[in-house]
Amino acid sequence: MSERVSEPSALSGQALPEHLPPEQLRELFLFADLSDEQLAWVGEHADVVEVPAGEDIVTEGTPAKCFHVLLTGTVAMSRVIGGDAVETTRTDQPGVYFGAVQFYLEDESARDYPASVRAITDSVVLALPAREFADEFARWYPMAVHLLEGMLLGMRKTNSQVAERERLLALGKLSAGLTHELNNPAAAAGRAADALRDRVTGMRNKLAMIASGKLAGAQLQKLVMAQDDFVKKVRHAPDLSPMQASDLEDEVGDWLDEHGVSGGWDLAPVFVAGGLRVDDMEAVLATAGPDTFEGAVRWLAYTVETESLLREILDATARISDLVGAAKQYSQMDRAPYRWIDVHEGLEATLVMFGRKLGEESGIGIVRDYDRTLPQVPAYAAELNQVWTNLIDNAIDAMTAADGAASGTLTVRTARVDDRLLVEIGDTGPGIAPEVRRRIFEPFFTTKAVGHGTGLGLDVTYRVVVNRHHGDVVVESEPGDTRFRVFLPLTEEPGPA
Ligand SMILES: Nc1ncnc2c1ncn2[C@@H]1O[C@H](COP(=O)(O)OP(=O)(O)OP(=O)(O)O)[C@@H](O)[C@H]1O
Ligand SMILES: [Mg+2]
Image: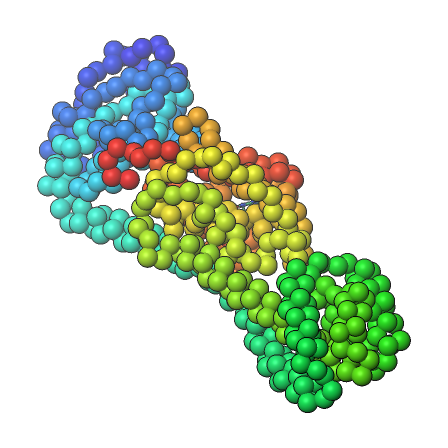
């Protein structure tokens, strides 16, 4: 045994044997109850391997060739999570096993090492060739292998069901917001359409009155032309501050009052909102003459109102179309699941889907820092939208106080970093404490109250970005500045994605 082994053990002081004798194997808890024949098989097939401090014994993601058992030394197990190696266990207990721990499974998932194990001190391990061990093990314990396979299959099924459920949850979160978003313009359009019917009737009546009176044909024609002119003005009416509007309303109201229009004060706001001023009233007076002036003014007021209502209906229906478009884009309805996409489309659709939870009214401002020159990337578009949803949802939560009041800034940034595309979701919330930070990508890890978080958002995010897209997701956080960075490859991976 080399002097480098720091821990005293049964092996120290001797030259390192190539294989262990049965008595020594039996000291390891894993092999304690094997029959003599089985033990002899292990002794014959397991190599004794020295590993110097600092070296990987097995490396995550590389082909799982050997099942290892620790004999002496200290080893640490780690997994790459969110782009960083995270140490999960450290031990010096002889007999602990690692490496191809699922050697008895025949399926693909057991093909690679699930974690890395590194020698912290100089160490000695047993290495059993996984393939041969699997065949032998299945002969020894045929029923156990069946049970283990069943258990793993069950676990995997649960995991995928959980992921499916999470997808539905996110959709639920969004569709509640979306329903609300759709209801507002739909109700507004409905109200405006009702009012419009009213005004159109009023207008018909007024026109009949004007026409049956003393108005000459030429005059009537001029009024109809004025009407067209008014309509144009309504379409381009400027937005006024309440102060400006009220000043102008005073002017127009006074003027109408002076010219004998009873209730001129009620008409003034209609004209002002429609972009009409005292000049326009004067033009009408000149055309209609004093006798028919009041009737003409009221008829034109109807014109302005109907035009404003039409504008409202158009705005509302346009908003509904936008929302439906975003929902379609978000869900990727009728689109190929895997294709080349512009990430900005998905980001924008996702932002729309959050509706009132974002934007000025919510207290959370949005900053878009997009690099529009970025190329398209190959992606599962709907799944990426899921990722943006989870990250933005977390950012909103981080910027929302316990009493429900939200404040802060959500920053969505895109950029190219080397040969990858970066999407960064930043928030100005309190940040993530280091002890929490280590666990956030674990399934079911949540710091939120029962009923507020399932703890699956980042687990799903990780799986979609890393497993599905061969990208990476990392987090940087300090109070007031938390950034989740998603890196996506710009080119297609060789082989199935
Ligand atoms: N932007 C962030 N700021 C602060 N903490 C965060 C942020 N994003 C995630 N976290 C922390 O990570 C934890 C896990 O997040 P994850 O999205 O996986 O689950 P969750 O948000 O708690 O629940 P849900 O399943 O509803 O998403 C959160 O509970 C929170 O403590
Ligand atoms: Mg979440």
